[in-house]
Length: 319
Image (cartoon, rainbow, N blue to C red):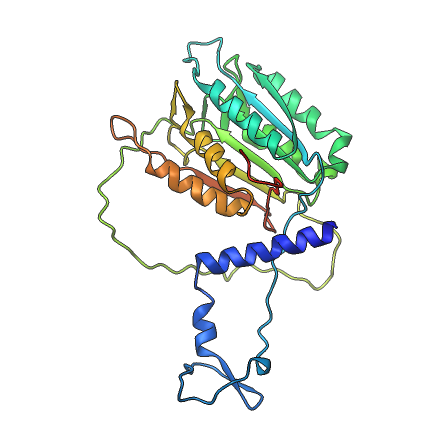
């Protein structure tokens, strides 16, 4: 049964990509078959020789997807710091984010744990303790959602002390420290400022530019000796509310821009879209917002050894 579900998710992933992009179409237009050989760079027209469907075999490469079928899927840890011992402003309104994320991931079949106003050391201890739990062996995934004040690479405990995202948050769940989650997706959603800069926006002049990227030719990799060793960090997907150096915005009445968009988009589209597709929609939605003074915000995603597609498979439309 699980194999059929995975195959169906792969097919859905391919169909969505074909719907959203026509990158494969030029290849199909410029390659056709005649008398057992392929003729590249030739466009098929009615004047060309007709080709029977049975003559052409175009393999459909099915992308791999992470297994997301167990109930529960795994743990979802929500840490929300609202009040601080120092003079930092209270994060009023974040309770709306907690409620939304708790409801969302409960419907996604996760065991959800919520904690508030933890000191930096308590946050570190909690995450390290979670990483050691045996329940991960029977899980498909882990989700960690952090909400607090922060700066680049750091969030703050309720005591005003720093918690470094690496190694304090991501480190406990790498392949060395959490073998039970090796090869399984680990998702992190970080609702915190990453600096003091404000994005005041700019005029949309719709200018475009082309760019090309080349791999560093000085770097080498070899596969002469097959190895069963795996990287120390893999299968991590980190979604940040904002780009490095900038603030993350929220509203006391509705909560944060970022997690509000995550809740809305995931609720509407998780039945049919992969995580990458969902986050593309989240980016579009957040980037469409603006504050009264015109301020803007841009979420960003960082992937570490992310190898497959991920579908939450909620089972039915999430209400």
